[in-house]
Image 1 (cartoon, rainbow, N blue to C red):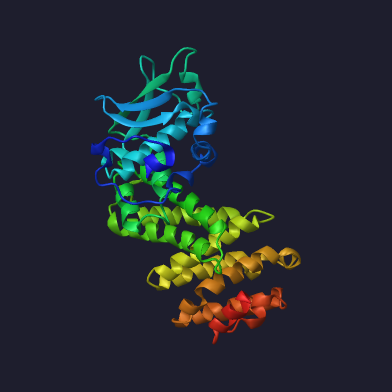
Image 2: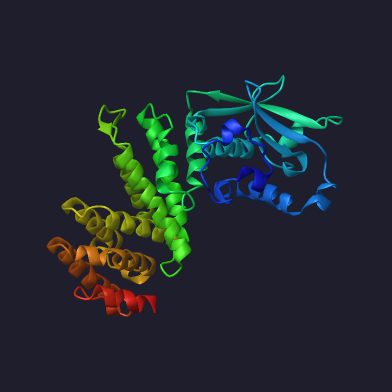
Length: 368
């Protein structure tokens, strides 16, 4: 995959056990433009390549083994950080725990390269190729954890959920602070996926739910507890949910609300509720979220500008109303919220068809 897409040359020892993966795996992170630049250059073919600077960039391990090779024309304007992510992707596809180590790059005879540096600076006027050393450290910094998580999460939706979780499990989470970094990366990527979520678009709908699958699968595979600063122990799922709750409370307190961000939060909340076992605590949690969003404590002035809040509440109800009706406390919440929404916006298209007894009819009308 790496060789066909980016022109990499990988040692047979690294290529053994490589999993099949989409060519777009390494383009979904924070350096999409730079990686797409490499792809675009490769697609232009030999005719355009002859007009570009000659030479190659070779990345080697300290043992001297060649990890990957790129033509100089493909890395023009690309940063060191983008190259580090591609190196980590190569190690991940080789199914090696080294992908979850501290990855650093160093030019031969110089100090470690800074992530913001441009690879163009490595070439001198008369040199045809440049060799870069790959330095692996067993201890990961917070930046390493964030970078590794982003690299592995690029495969969500294209690789099997268990494969992604296996890569994430290689990350060394020594402290609760490291767990927070990983949970933050997962939360930001999941909310970004749900920002473009569409129930009627199968591809976009599957991308958001794929992240939820990874979150819950990783929580099951890694049930360990790490000690927080206050001495309490916390699991990954509890850490993730705490961050998610803080994100929700922060957005609700903003005036005006960011409609796209708030809808993505509602979609994530709805999918988490539907994919986990329904309990008294989970029903209370969604009830509290709906109350914070459109509850009577918002005051009379809230009636004048509550379109976004009402839309977001309807979005959440659309996702969770069938599961809520399986419980008496859920039916009670649905009844109270329905009456409140009718009071705020009686002509809203979803509120007109919202019926506690027939949620599927409401969903069908909303889709129309």
